[in-house]
Image (tube, rainbow, N blue to C red; front, side, top):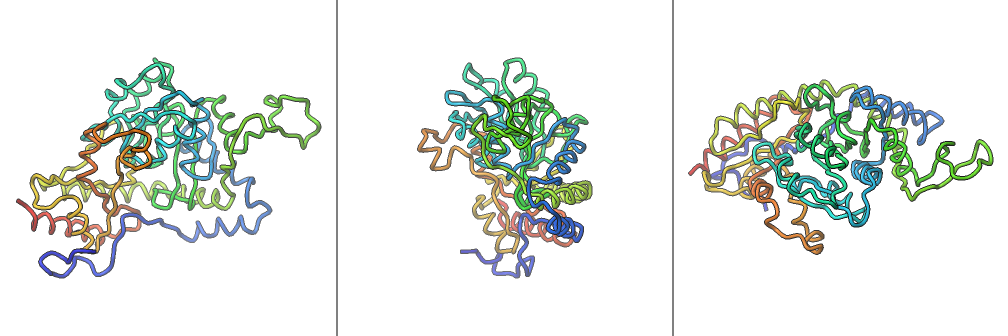
Length: 397
């Protein structure tokens, strides 16, 4: 049940404001309609067009688009050769797919703690967990901020470990002047509607490694190939194909590809508006000692997907749950990203227990995600700030 607005007063807003929302314009709609009138609804030219566009955007040599961000992580893990008996290190502050991709391959997810200031995976914690069973690291660009790629890449390559960046939040982000997608061994993206650009559902894996690229293509489409270099038997004709591995149906339709191609044209303006909003939030919340503003590493030119408000409960007469409900009473409808993955019942049944990553667990109890998306008006942003200020002022110790 929602708590009433503070002291029974009038809420800051009359209508509800949610934490995320897609932006679709007429160009997007027309792009999809054009495909619906074409000869191909799937497996057509828009797939290649999108993959080429992602390569131009990121600087990566190869792109493989697929049905969603989870599928992207799965085929990336498969391409890396993750299998039973292996371990995959990842962050606990992420959507479950970042760890589940290891389980899909029969491997064990291992959770490294986060930097308490940036909320990204801590390379020092990763290094301590590496052993002879470590096959890959899945480092998450949480909120869109790039992980500490230089350290992680050097560490992984020295030890023969595949570095996969889960860039689900980070399309448009660059690290030290180089676009995410062209740095790690593989980088995955997600195009869910709350992300910066969307095609409803969709994902992609980007790489500079041709061998990985060919494996990604196989795992996206049933393990089936027509590539003469990969065929194991003599071809029977131009129509001939073979299943040479166990793959999946993770294809993306041409309608979705067309929508994303159009959305990518708007990525610069999406990034600019999100940056404006983040700046306003940071300026307002940075003045309040009861709140902690997420820190950015200087190498990351971030396209921000999430804005994390972190409270300091020791300075407030309210905890995170109370703060969340107080904002809802002001018609600011937030979310929480994320519950530590190993806290979920499924992972508990696998033997994981609380206490693995103290920084991550503390962050979870103090954070919530504020509204952040392109179509937020200045008035909307001011309302969010006003609601936060109102609650902090009322519950200040």
